[in-house]
Length: 220
Image (cartoon, rainbow, N blue to C red):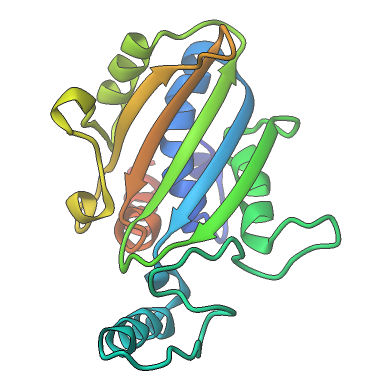
């Protein structure tokens, strides 16, 4: 609705924020969000071509038994996790974490929404994944959440853990939709939900989202 009434430049959100906010919107519409804990697992392509090359070169060096020397990231990314994306603020939060907080609040028009973020760079070429724990004002069951996600444009549900069916970066790569799985009710809170969402940050997180914004503006 904001895009329809807007005149001027429209910025597409941060790619991690887009993936995270896709399931948050229908949950907020149904039960009003109170608190979100978000942990992202972000592909090296989010850092550009240099990130892709770093993972490829480090993996090849490791396979050849050579010493691995980080060239792009602060630490070796091959076979490793780096809990630092962007510069750190004095309070200890990274730039990527602050983007996730600020942009989520802005898009959902919830300036006081409580958000606890952690962003992690992982040795995957494409797709960002986000583990979300959400508290709502009114209870939403896991079954109801799956219904909400299935009905929301741009979301798809793959959630049969007993059959090992859930989204992974390899299964979501190249898709425009964000894919939801591992939806479950929080054992520690009566109005809490935990879930896992994966999105191709080069498509929905960037190009596809920009095209969809343009299409929305043209239709308005």
